[in-house]
Length: 122
Image (cartoon, rainbow, N blue to C red; front, side, top):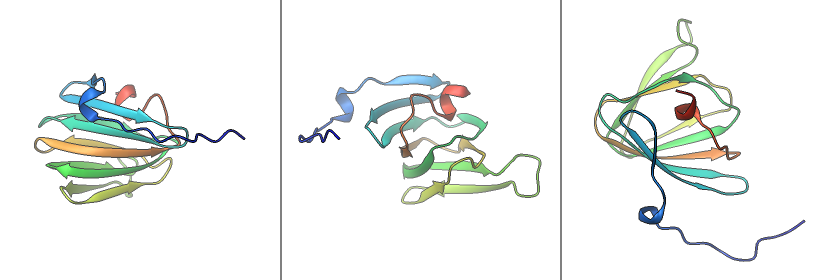
């Protein structure tokens, strides 16, 4: 087993920003076992329902996201607003969508890391 013996400091402003969906920009740091994404969503940004094998924590730093949780069209589907200072935990394989109610900034933490997420499949 190889152990990395150094720590790395990242500066968000130095990282490349991509735009996988309209009204959404993202910067990511991808590690060996986790990934963190800084995501800025403009009002009206609509991330379609999707699911993935990754466990996800969505930390809302500013604004409000309206999540659809569960399979759309089923009795289990519900909407939940997550605002600044709140965290939504999504276990693996849970269907979810997101709609930016206002200018929103989030940190998404994924494990395991992945080159693609729900916004890449949108």
